[in-house]
Image (cartoon, rainbow, N blue to C red; front, side, top):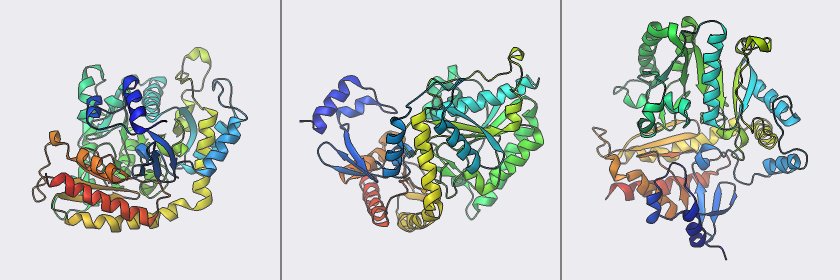
Amino acid sequence: MMTNQTLANRDLSVLWHPCTQMKDHENFPIIPIKKGQGVWLEDFDGNRYLDAISSWWVNLFGHANPAINAALKDQLDTLEHVIFAGFSHEAGIQLAEKLVEITPSGLNRCFYADNGSAAVEVALKMSFHYWRNLGQTQKTKFITLENSYHGETLGALAVGNVALYKETYAPLLMDVITVPGPDCYHRELGETWVDYSTRRFAIMEQTLQQHADTVCAVIVEPLVQCAGNMRMYDPVYLKLLRSACDKYNVHLIADEIAVGFGRTGTLFACEQADITPDFMCLSKGLTGGYLPLSAVLTTDKVYSAFYDDYQKLTAFLHSHSYSGNALACRAGLATINIFQQHSIIEQNQGLAATMTKVGARFNEHPHVSEVRQTGMILAIEMVKNKQTREPFPWQERRGLKVYQYALSKGVLLRPLGNVIYFMPPYVISEDELLLLAEIAWQGIQHATQQ
């Protein structure tokens, strides 16, 4: 008979888990999951866990979603995968058509990769290669925001700025230009998000003015820096950035991997600024949390710079073995169909309002400095001193204590440092949100009273 303990022992004898200090599991057990249904996961001992973080932000419509299941079963009987160079298939074509239809106007070309980091690599290489094809070989730099995160491969890591992930590998990474960001946690008392984000943009404007001749692109996470402790800013920053990139002849890369597909309250975060980036990177929710797939959407102008006789050596010779995987594309199609057939964005407005309501309580907690929300993302920042916002020492791992407590009560929360956040599947009920908030409150009480 399989139990949590027997499977955990087998796991630890052969596996190395992501984003994990494996020594932690000497004292804190791995939890093997047997099945999932909706927002709930169940382990081999029969314990259930509310998936409050959408299994690393990917699951939009619940585990074992009937519509996505049916689409995959149908696709599996027809075609699982085929080389995507020189060949194509219906699911890949249909998904690209849908993505062109639903993303901001002007993004008419779709390039598939297989995860978020790979999508960022594609966008970086495309931007650099575009300028090279136009003869502007001096353009080799990228501008990024402090506290940003764009993935774990070397190019993506280079344009990120979260020290925990980046510092170790610094000798391997290309140099980038890092600009202080619009993170509204640092605004002055009484200053609005709009005013702070506008004020902070002045630094980006100066940087572009100074370095435009050598810069390929600016890369940003629109509205929410997710891995950077769920820090948030106003859409006005994106609007100003789009105008400045046009002015200084620099590409804008929007990394919507975590914030796309409804997370910020609109289908894509860029919609709230009414802008079209030159490149939009998508993944995570693209397949509803089922299969690895990413896409880079770009413009006909970019595409045309690569379109020539082979002998000119302008082609974009970037590839992944599983590019355009038929099963993943079919899952993506099913996911978009759910959005379009069930008015998900409108339904989420009600859920977001409930999240606001259940989150308000945390404003009064003596160890919470801020509760912030953008759409279906709510973050609660724990601090040692509420008045001065002095953080708890990171070595105390207060967020881990919340995580452990919540698991013991049947809720999966995985804090970012000392930031507790709710990023649930869109099928969560109001009662489940109330349960989530209550367990999070208890967890913060537990973690801050020691």
